[in-house]
Image (cartoon, rainbow, N blue to C red; front, side, top):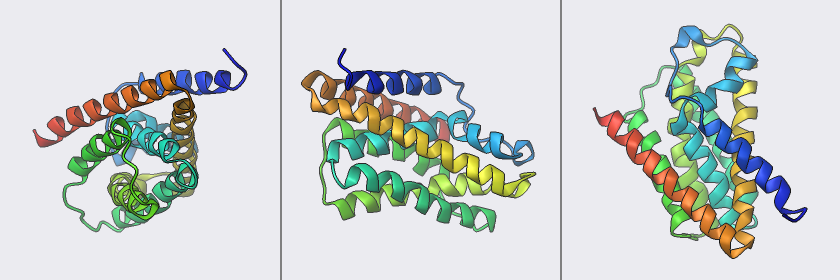
Amino acid sequence: MTTIERPAAFVSAATLLLVALPVLAHTDAGSVSGFASGFLHPVSGLDHVAAMAAVGLWGAFLGQPAIWLLPVVFPMVMALGGVLGIAGIPVPGVEILIALSGMVLGSMVVFRVKPPIAVAAALVGLFAIFHGHAHGMELPGAASPLGYSAGFVICTGLIHLSGIAFGLLTKWKKGEIAVRILGGVIVLAGAYFLVNSLR
């Protein structure tokens, strides 16, 4: 293993550990507290982890500037969705769109879809609204809304970075296959979450 491959392998292993956490989807607002709770919340629902990792993977496939732009667009627009949730403004189909985000973004990776950067950013931003709304609905019950928000944003960024690190394996042929397979796993996970959300 080369020096370049070691960090990617480490981040990939860390990502797999995150994915191994139980599927809890969304917590009740009463269980939300401060920074630690906000930091752990994104990894408590695999529907969110899958979509956030897919953003990083897809960005790595698209290259510059998408590799950094998409992971910036997602949390920024997610914050807007969070404001809608905090304000109690209803957004239809939140759980369905969160599940679809994993399927669609994972498919972008599997099929190496390379749209113009504006289209990619708009698609990522669209799904980010629904992820943000789901979490914003929980925020008013937080003991420390600012601490919770900070923890949530930091963890989201780390998940994006994990996706980017794994996505950098596309520089090698076998690595590209591994990344596309992970995209397929995300698609299947999204399908599973979609079925559950329709029950």
